[in-house]
Image (cartoon, rainbow, N blue to C red; front, side):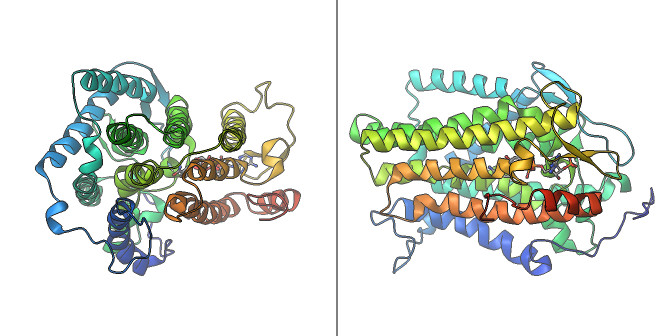
Length: 421
Ligand code: NDP
């Protein structure tokens, strides 16, 4: 496609169900978050109940929740701007420039943990977040709407080359949903990069911790199931922040505009649905036998190993294909000059990192037993998300690499699960 510096490229191809999806998803998903949280707190914990456990409107709003959410985003913004860590460059943009990013997410996590530890030791009742969960979610949803609105309006002041190729259809509903601008910034503060891994991801483990404190309040000590869920998910978040630089090469940063989809996903969906298992365990305690615990730990370990090794291998290859850890791998050339790995993890299946992620997601649900479907919400939703994401990535790679991608698909026929899918 020919790009004009002054006139943005108009794309008519739409994803996520087009205008219908862009209209329904921003209504349906926030309601889903609130419904899941409400179900989690009912004694039956059944997803389908009659009458449905709709929260009374009075329980949806609490000024304290608004203070907590604003304070939390303010704290994470301050930690993001703290001059520690290193500065890294993103991939080259369409105009050939590269943006600089402050890589200090792991510091932010450690600082948050220290501050939280201090507050708890001074008597802050962290477990109260369990009682406040619905108003907190409502405030996070409102923030994501407001942010998306700001991003949409602000994008009309951005130069054409700063717009995402896919967020520029001219349909306001769709463009609001998918995001017009690729890397919106206020000065050097990168809004998308900040939201990807900070308030939501760190917020998720803080909420998990709060659920554990609530369990201690109710039953004097944390259960093994709760410790597993907290430990596994903390490991995942620590890993993401430790490898924060890797996010600079992901589809979210490189390809997708910043609109409602990512803002809501980062700020509301991740923190309030990814840790549903911990909340479920507060109301529905489970005891686990030692062999079950060992089995679940092994499954999470296997998933983590596949996830980390495959992601690191590709990142290393993309940053320096001659590095000794990847130089021996077999590759195929593409017309763009970039090469594709066809041996190692990326010769096993076309998305080994997704396979590892799904195995971990399953291990996070198993501590909750098999009596309810609710704790399996994450693994079910996440598998659907990754299958859809794989299809999107496949389309983009075919457009980028053409015949070389077809060759790769012939050499590595399975997408995520060997011999199955
Ligand atoms: P990937 O890291 O899987 O990257 C896909 C890109 O990798 C392709 O577009 C292509 O880009 C490159 N690539 C594909 N095949 C090859 C190959 N054979 N050799 C070299 N490069 C190749 O993308 P995602 O951003 O989807 O995932 C990153 C991680 O984040 C995954 O582990 C995923 O599970 C996780 N994730 C987690 C989510 C969550 O909510 N917990 C949500 C989404 C993702 P190019 O050639 O241009 O470099």
